[in-house]
Length: 438
Image (cartoon, rainbow, N blue to C red; front, side, top):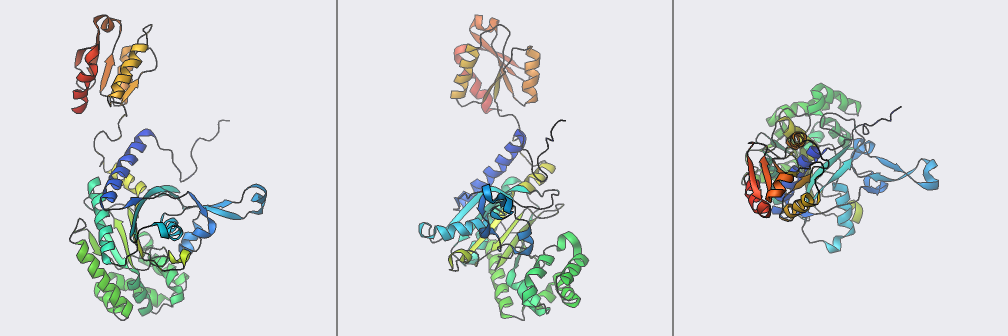
């Protein structure tokens, strides 16, 4: 019996065209992030289990992929390592570990895979890339404004025009929960339920909040406030922390309005984001017809202190590469040629003809900066042309016995059908203009 060839559920193989699309998006993201002064960082796929647990809240802890101890300890069922759940907690560990080597204001971007033991769905996988930017060391609203600007510019460069960045503040939600009569010990679980509002609806969230210990009346007060901006403002204004958070949000909105995020950022009282480490402003990108978001983030001023005992302000934003790719593919947003073949030209072969000259010419073209594929078998010329066309190769070079006798090659444009005889010594010079026009 043949062995199962499908990858594990929630994992995927990436074929060449998939990788090229990913590389294109990553290239745009990297280019924009570096223009905003963010520096690259990478961390290990595996972290010590204690590094990750207790950082994401009850729901997040359930989704951590734990690794069994190895060797003689394997049978114990104990775990000592885990696959990273996100890029934020590893960053906090890095900052605590290397604090003396990092600048006062450390800005980093990181694009690496993360793993979650989640239930796979459209745009949701168990292994996926996150594209993070984080700024460490400042409580200024300029940090959030720069995050919003960078993310907006990335999305605009990729061709998105209909995105909205929802903005809220954890202190506003805390004030609302207090005003609704929800005990502080139940705030974290209430926020987990509220974070599902777009997925399970008002009734589902109310039932979930009640199941987690909130009263039906308190849940109704919160849900009503999300539907009435006036009611929301009235409730959160009852606490000093709520008023200060509202002022902070106003500052962020004003600063964001002066940059690329203008017209895309909106205060969204229902936005909760379920991760427990957020302490201030929280953000999430929404586009029409997508269950879930393209990314999100927020301020987490207490997380690094869990590792070093010193509170260090921090704020970050993570774009979900897979969801961006899903939407861009469905909307046909990729520029023409992004997923096409890697070769600019293909060299043909003929039965009984020496291959040395073909490989020598291929080397000359590669040295000149061209991407060259060599057809590996001596086959009918029509089949070689068909193969090149199927791969999206535009030019084919034919150098059979007749061409060699004349000291020439034939350069064929598979798009127009045009054929040109070119002296062997002038192939590179003749070919490069054709490529630049492609």
